[in-house]
Length: 282
Image 1 (tube, rainbow, N blue to C red):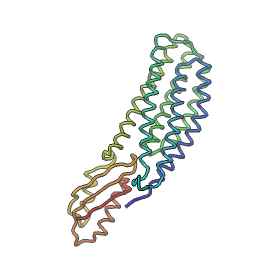
Image 2: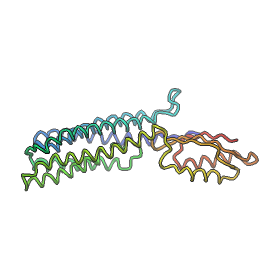
Image 3: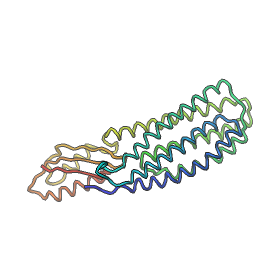
Image 4: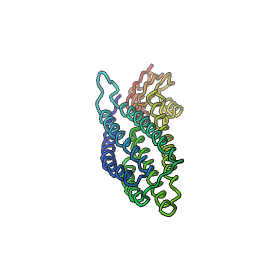
């Protein structure tokens, strides 16, 4: 039994398209501000933000691919392209975070002067742009959207930190070392959160039982169906971190209505986002 699942990826594609164009416009603002203010924190954000735009474009493309129907070569469809995107994006952002660290750490020992007023203005604009992106993605279901969501949320934290830093620098000129310190903190935050998203995405690719799937509860629900004697064997894995596929072997009493038994199994399975199930009765 196969259920249409394209709506997840269609919505994700629309969200990512919106966020892509928002970030593309903001990139122009950030690079101009980094050059004008000589701020390492803003320059770090440009590197970060440029990687944002590239990764969002890739995520958007792969979500579009994920909407394709199944073929003879891809019999389960293309939904895993969404997870592939999440893996690539997470790795890419983690690498960029290490680039930020390599640029920021030396500046701790040789801080440079920055334009605090310019930093403040850009930070306010940055918070507005990034808030719009985060709001659009906050209900996203795919790991692709989650990877971009964490990235954008990290941007908000970064711009809030830069805003606070700019205010401090206006009244304390000796605090230039805080500029690279903020960049280091944000880079570490990104490494932690995108590393976690990468780990979860790889779990999906390795066909781990989905985290939301309670094996004991499911088994008990099936065995409570009238006419079911026991579950002899079953396997479940996720296609994209949302929808799952299952194969199930059930020992039944053939004196009962096996059609009704199958129907009840379908109903129970649907509660666990199972979109494709193969049932063998014996």
